[in-house]
Amino acid sequence: MKFKKVAPILLLLLVLQIREAKAQKPFIDSIQPTQGIAGSLMTIKGGNFSNNLSKNIVYLGAGKAEIITAIDTLLIVSAPANTTYEPITVTTSNLTTWASTP
Image (cartoon, rainbow, N blue to C red):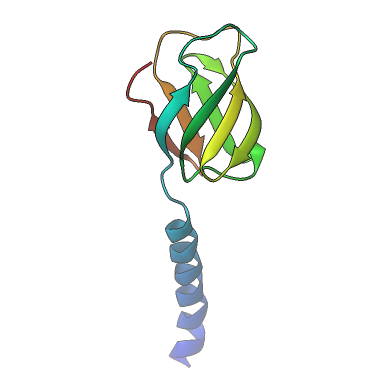
């Protein structure tokens, strides 16, 4: 009898643990080019990015970039007009990484 009450809770915990195990913090290896104007395309190489465009969020300082292409190891973004001299951030699955330099 007790197992029937505990089984749904154990199943829920297992599902949450599997979901958490899949989400890994993204990382940035390189960004090219390092300078440009609004609308310029930038390539961000790294890992643990989502293949789904809408699941990646990239900021170039204060400006949110438009994601053009996304695969697990590469993002191509269009630089926004309101870019500021601050680190580039990439967020995937609610996990954020920062470039080591702006």
